[in-house]
Amino acid sequence: MIFVLIVSVFIVIHGINRYQRTGSAYQAIYLSNKHIAYLEKYFNFYTKLPQQSKKIFATRVAKFMTSKRFIPRDIEVVTNEMKVLISASAVQLTFGFPKVQLSHFRNILVYPDSYYSLINKTYHNGEVNPRLNAIVLSWKSFVEGYIHEDGRNLGLHEMAHALRLENKIMNEEYNFLDQRFLKDWELRATHTMKEIEEGRETFFREYGAIDREEFFAVAVENFFERSTEFSEKHPLTYNTLRQLLKQDPLLLEKP
Image 1 (cartoon, rainbow, N blue to C red):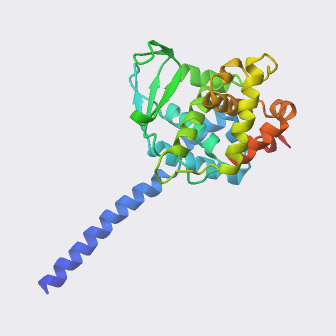
Image 2 (image 1 turned 135 degrees about the vertical axis):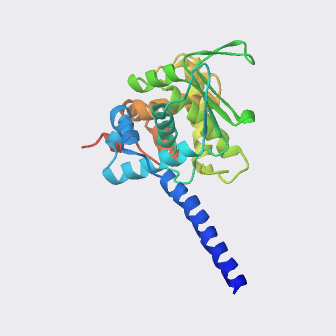
Image 3 (image 1 turned 180 degrees about the vertical axis):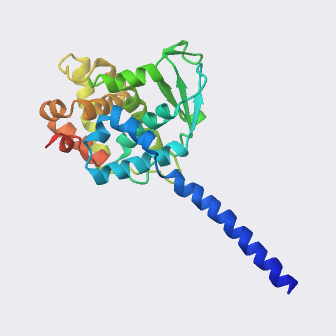
């Protein structure tokens, strides 16, 4: 009888603990109405989505947000608004990959403005550091990127770097980019970078000619913010990026 009682108590306690853990996880995959209001007010990509896609997007933002450590640098705290919008920029880029959360990059460092890098001895607005599992952002530059949709977006730029690195890191998210389209992309990138260097290409800014990683990040910025012009001036490159990222921002522009 005593044994049965002990077992029963164990089952009840275990059940409560399990409920608390799963309950917490269950709650974590949803955004509050206040958090969703940030997306509705500031995130155009989200507002253009169909209603069902909005629900999926919000759920993925919640998952991303709760899986990262947001670390304040030279500010008192990383606010919920910051967390939601930074997470949304990552989900925007990875929306075609339901299981990709950029899991290697557990730390997101947020500065109020440009910061001095002791490594490069210069001021930065953002960077991705795989050794420290970190994505670093200037909040001022991040906000400006979404206010002015001119093909310069710090959030998308740094998330693009993180995406390329995540694809190469041996973890549960390894090698999610389709190698066929990736190979095609590298060829197009090399060709366009040469045109930029020679002054024959002006749609992409000169910074994109530094190397293939920077060209990818610059192309991603334009893919989302100047989709129509990108598709008209570089239809083959746009189509390759569309296939690579498994989404098409142009579809959101149609009524």
